[in-house]
Image (tube, rainbow, N blue to C red; front, side, top):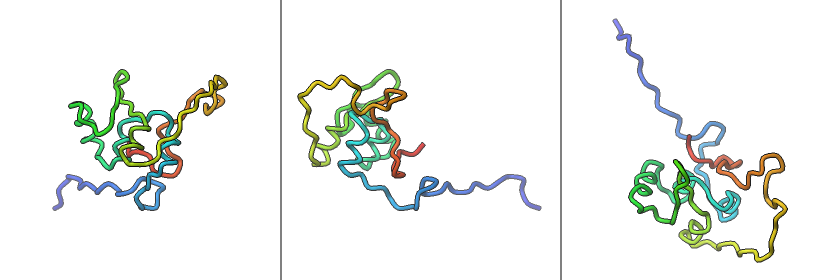
Length: 122
């Protein structure tokens, strides 16, 4: 007689909807994230696991500067680009106050979700 216990199935290796290939972070994709990103995305870009990233952040040992906003860590994208030896974007000296780059409905500038299937795991 078989046990009533269920066996666990292994989790899929890739994100649903992806072709299983590892994602490639380019300077353009990092810049498209906006001025800052979340810790999980920064860790994915740098090749660090999510749990290791949170442990490093708690010890102030994350490879790039970050700051804590309430219960969340935010990581500026410019230091990530410098750490990876990629060209950092030039800083604009003109004053744009017309919500340039913001979504028209929500005012959200940038985001942590990537449309090319390279978003951080849930």
